[in-house]
Length: 138
Image (tube, helix red, strand yellow):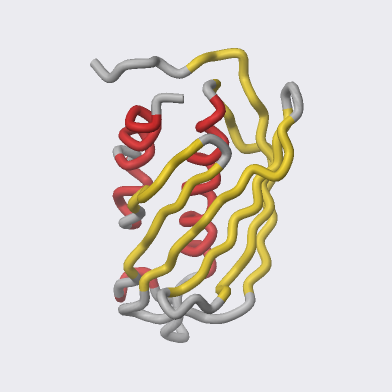
């Protein structure tokens, strides 16, 4: 795995950039990212919108799935929300590979705040393609 290449791909993603997600750490079968919550991330009740939490987990989970040397794409994701989060908090998503078959893998993503409260947990099923990532950034 070319860690810097995968980090560059995901930190350069237009959706991740629009939301403000930063991939902090990558290793095979693991990814960690963060998001500082701003006013534009909040729902009508003043807490973070569930879709923002989902995007954070999806983005970091996608980075995790792509640490295996081949392009990986999401097939299905579920999320369970436990606690609200608010403007000014930092959310962290940690994704761990929990199963890798020949074509299908599973990732668990835990989303916590900067006080280590568990905000949500996600489960992602992904498909491993035959296509390898480029080894070098041009």
